[in-house]
Image (cartoon, rainbow, N blue to C red):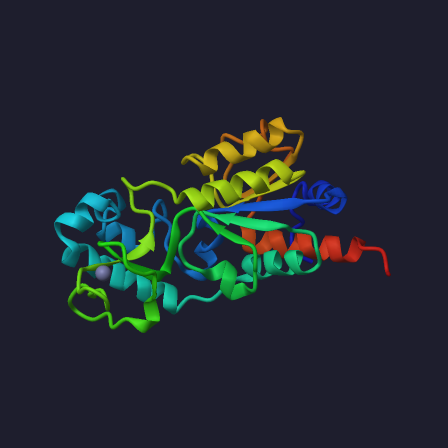
Amino acid sequence: MGDSISGLDRAAKLLAESDRAIALTGAGISVDSNVPAFRGAQGLWDRYDPMEYAHIDAFRSDPARVWAMLRELGDIIANSQPNPAHRALARLEEIGKLAAVITQNVDGLHQRAGSKQVIEFHGSGERLVCLRGHGPFARNSVRIDDAPPGCPNCGAILKPDVVFFGEAIPPRALLAAQVEVERADLVLVLGTSAEVSPASEIPAAARGRGARVIEVNLEPTHLTGGVADVTLLASTSRALPALLAAIEGAEPAA
Ligand SMILES: [Zn+2]
């Protein structure tokens, strides 16, 4: 037996009682898939300052320089796999215990794990768009080598279909998330300190409508002891499978 996670029973009870749960995920859920978080101490962001390389002005002024980082990040993501947390969320959706995932990640790991209802606040690196508005094009349909890739339609430089610093969240994703938050009676906040808008507004907005909030993070956040009804201080790849097991064990036999 491993150490039990404090609060797990309470979290499992809330999830079991929920009729419409949603998840809000951030970089922390993909760390165990070796996708580096901006704030992590992992290699990529030591060498590329995200505030510099992930800003749209940097991309527009020197796309070749930013594409050096993007190629490296793309290789990391291509070689990564969904971890037990991604798979547990896909399974919760499958058994009707999770309506949607709202993610701040651009790695596509929720979809690769089998999640169907995924709202991407920050777009996806799996797609590329042309700076003149063509696309999106599947990343794996475009040759990405030493030079920034060009648009198949017009030759202009392609950019990952992700929201850079300095760019707006896609309105469609905002609206879809808003609809989910209004209908949810439980929000799982997973691997994110939820400090960046619009994700930052979701837990309190849901709570204000009477929804429960379960947080899973390695460290306490501003939600802990306040907006969060329960906080599990654990990795998502450990806590989510444990939560799923508790739910599946608790489901009455048909
Ligand atoms: Zn184009």
